[in-house]
Length: 142
Image 1 (tube, rainbow, N blue to C red):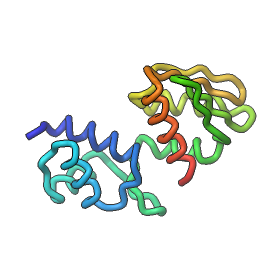
Image 2: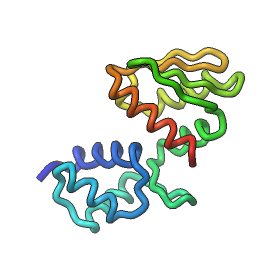
Image 3: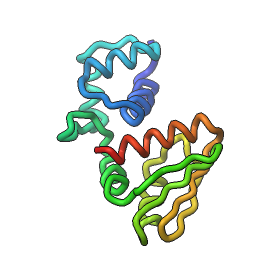
Image 4: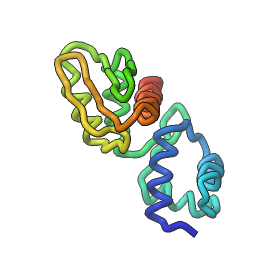
């Protein structure tokens, strides 16, 4: 059986990448990743990790709520160029959004540079850039 810290890391990845609406959905996603856990275990994990259920009915990490608000209010579009992700924001907000992204410590992002209304985020490779773009777009739609 995998350890709790590994399960927490997997939960962070799952919640950031997918629209998880129920603890049962989370149990199934964890089982697909090789974790043998029950709904009761996941319920404790949700409480311990401080996951919040948004009005839209999806779970979100507590540390991502600030990020989600900033992205939903300030990001206009996201574009890919290989392992580079270009994020266009409303004027004057790129540095604040970039700081929130850096604070979230997203594993796909190696670093970012922000101007007035544009952020350039650099990932290791194109699949990670695509995953990061999906995360940003997920947060934009809430």
